[in-house]
Image 1 (cartoon, rainbow over the protein chains, first blue to last red):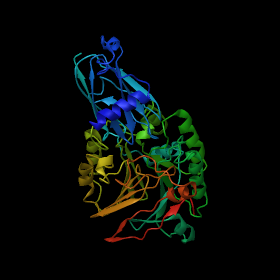
Image 2 (image 1 turned 90 degrees about the horizontal axis):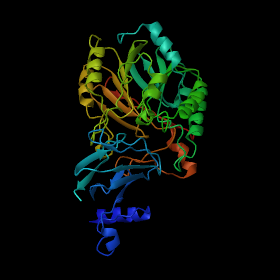
Image 3 (image 1 turned 60 degrees about the horizontal axis):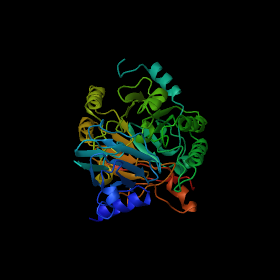
Image 4 (image 1 turned 120 degrees about the vertical axis):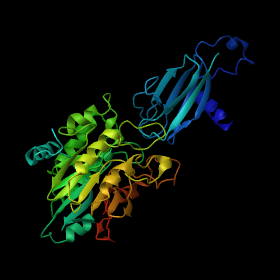
Length: 120
Length: 311
């Protein structure tokens, strides 16, 4: 649960609106958000949240907050693959199909994460 | 071309690799490797036999973050240390992470610095040297001539067999360093037929034994490589990557990791991450530079002396 909160805070801090779940209080936004987004922070060699759940169509942005470069590479090495991200650099990918997408840092492969994409 | 390059070819290759830094000074005498710090080397009389070589590592040219705002400058300091040695080593091994981001400018800057040493330099890449669009093409274009696969090679020098292994490519999710089946097969062939009495020095970027698995400080298929090395009477494994000295002796195999010339990293598990360790500026140089190694002479470890950029 704290991971979810942390992810939300990260998204807000970056000015990225996490629209899922916001529909109840903001009916106008509840209608098929076309540009849903979410963020994953790379901090201290950890993807946070390590498991992120989004709906189809969500654009996930990874931000490297370490002093060391990292990459974001899908386990299958081709669904998505960032170039090297230096400090504060970002990589975004829009998930258009439901499923579970494991990924890792190809430089530090002990760093792993997962995006769970659910049908809208 | 086979791995048994002619000495002439290999020498040419050496000259192509204009590279160095600062690190441990190794003495090979009577077929057994030993090491002394550079301080000792300065005081030691020249050996009547044998030869010396240096290991430098993790220069990270281009790094400019708080842990060391100018990794180029500390690399230059390391080179100045080498130049002050009264006894010139025969050559230098650089165990990877030459650059921070594999940029041409970083490779060029590093080259300008190491050229001053005027010694042959042997390389293996670190993961930081594989970050160009071509995923290592920039490194291989510069240093990969006459190497095999992702850049591995071997050579003989005054009776000692040196093997350069690459364990920073094709890494698998959740894993550590990796040598891969092709390289292992090559290694087995490279070592076969060699007398067990021949001293072997293996160098690679990521440690070939597991220093700290949670931070990926090890090589998944190292055991296979080490199994080919077990029969040799004197094996020395030199690595970098973790920016600190660690040592281990297992049978006839002595493992050693070198300090960085750029920034220190925490001891495995003693910190939030393996990222750069920020220390007070006045302390930085005491954690960079020259490393010493434990080697096996018969069955007894040899005393070690450290040399840092602060001394």
